[in-house]
Length: 160
Image 1 (cartoon, helix red, strand yellow):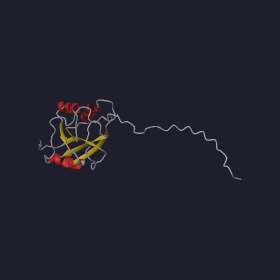
Image 2 (cartoon, helix red, strand yellow):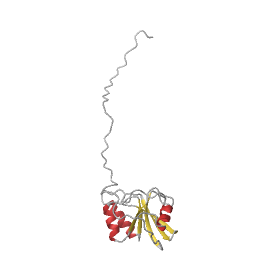
Image 3 (cartoon, helix red, strand yellow):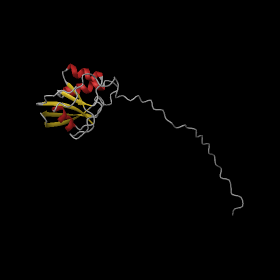
Image 4 (tube, helix red, strand yellow):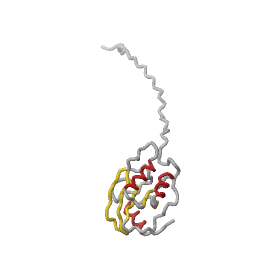
């Protein structure tokens, strides 16, 4: 659902992969590296600052903590690739609109938002624990080496 967003004198939190306006919007919210806090007036970007996502490697509750962090920074909207149900609920309770952007730079995402061309999320876009790797990788080495090397260096016959 695309709705023209009034972005006059507003702070928008964008989940990012690095700390500049040319950075790509991160496909995850709760476990992204950080957020670019972008102050906009229409399509004009007045200011931006980067905050690290301190909950990125949390054992649990990363989405909720990340949502609280952007709320504390004064965000009125969020742009991200995906949001889990807990983070989405926290943001919605604070009347913060959430927009989905994939494969776009921060600058382009802000422009599209101002033009009403970014879809607003009306529900979470992924299941709980989406960004958590299960860590169940099984090594493929077969470990059959049983080196019992007890070389005794036998003399060569017929030599000097």
